[in-house]
Length: 270
Image (cartoon, rainbow, N blue to C red; front, side, top):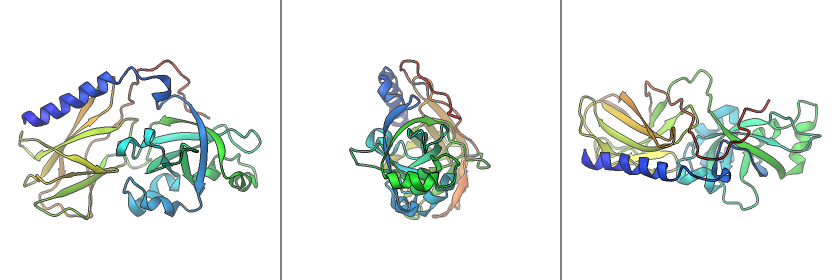
């Protein structure tokens, strides 16, 4: 219990101490860079976030690989960005919204989009999307926006196939709303106050080798306000949880992280 509280306190202090970041560090402010595209969205299915084949189903396949400053060692997995290209002849003012599913190590582009997302930046004019693809790499601007999964209203917890009851549990979060990042996860048996922490293994995957028995509850620490906010999901996994299955967390993250940066144009582009 003491170790768990220390972990949450440490993360909160860390978040608070980093709140005086510059405009360049603010996700919600427009950034200018370049974007390329993958010829097939399936190329992103093997992405660093470990969403696997599920990746192409997010946002109708409008997904992206992002540079380390956005990927954030996996904390940026699932983040949503509105991105638009700057070619006045070919590009719409609205652009499209993409979800981060992979890591992009290129120093030439901040984002590598699925071809479907790349084409969606074009004006709704016959042939504009094809002409845009011919450009290959384009100038863009992008900013972070809240994720909206339509009829997926609740946060989901997927138990990874690598999980081995009762010794090892690996999970990843799906359909996370709002505009925040999960920076810590605690786990305990339902009704118990004996919490232990999970560790981010890679990408969107969190693991623990100290799996409580019985039904399981979770606490998620998300970036919200200028520090952090704890979201308590009182009963997520049943006692007979199974690897490969997805469970409703019964809660949703709706917060918009408040970044300590100068004012900027952070409205949704239309």
